Image 1 (cartoon, rainbow, N blue to C red):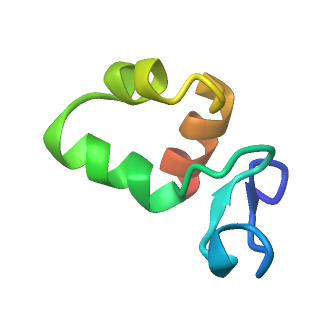
Image 2 (cartoon, rainbow, N blue to C red; image 1 turned 90 degrees about the vertical axis):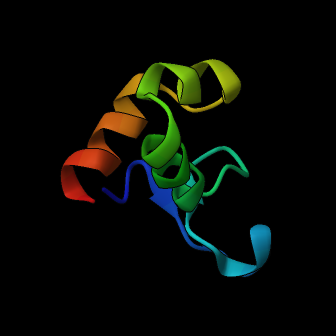
Length: 59
């Protein structure tokens, strides 16, 4: 999962984010509680489907 998620104090205060973005992993899971993966990907185009799927699988 390290290929998809990064934790860096200089990026979003150390919250786990998708690598190459400032989108938190928590945001994905918040979307999945209320909506769908497709809507998350539409709302956050900087996150790839492969990134999201890997995080969900290893969640």
